[in-house]
Image 1 (tube, rainbow, N blue to C red):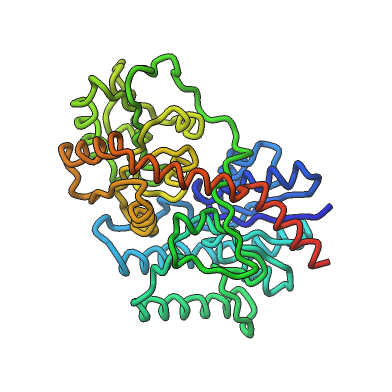
Image 2 (cartoon, rainbow, N blue to C red):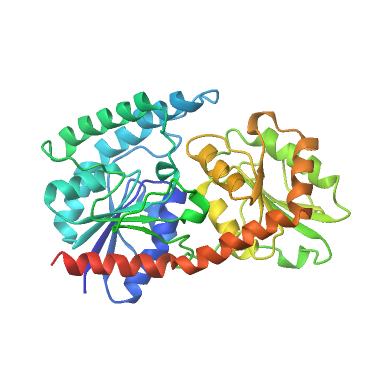
Length: 393
């Protein structure tokens, strides 16, 4: 039996993939614990019985970490690092050290954006694996941007000097021991790096807690069904987009039924509408099995979960890694891309008509679904972690 310490940021999209892996490890008799700046979030996603070590750190929406909506490109990346990722790492580091001393893990599993997990593990001489919950880092996103890449390396060097081993060279985004990427080269593209320690495992969809209740009886089997979601972190900017989606979908109500996820209540109180169901939350995984298309922000988890079910997409990226993921979807032929800030109901409707009627998009989504399911997901990730623990003894 081995002990695995998962270090995750307080972000649902980064915790969820690790939950499935942790559940596999627990099912095989191993000990698992978590470190998170939001222990309540970790327990809600990993289960009430999960062993969770709390630590300091900003949570999304904290003062000073709310990004101005007009930031794009390199400036948005700089803000993300300076206002959130680097302060999160500095704040988490003491808690990660305390958790390692108390739990005594054989392996630390550090999310690629929870830099403290990797740097503290490296400083303590513990083997560590990277949980790469987005593939943007591995798709050549910084090719042709040497100044951006250099700026990132300099910030990581400063961070390593402060919370890790100043004489080390570890890049907390990419473990030299084991890199688990929750995607596949068929989606990432030819830029996907290959090395013996890099494993593309596809989505991790097992071990999740039960989702919210859903009025399944309201789904109309005679019509195509479309899910619209902007994830859990975009309620501040999504109101106009969701309204345009509702307009476009109501215009197609004779042959399309929609489910719109509206956690912030931007569309007002949900009405008893049989054509457009507006709900604050949905059980996304089981619902995707019933969908014919997805409209989303190109969040990595949502894209991969849709393609796991062979569902083509309309993607409108907002920020962070989403433009890169949207590019992957389009390059793979599995969807259509729109500009989030300029979307109109007519353009969105035309894009939706395309993915619903063009067999090429569905065929591409089905091709990725087949490759995803062959990659092994949480089961494969757990096996790789077991090997790392065994090799490190």
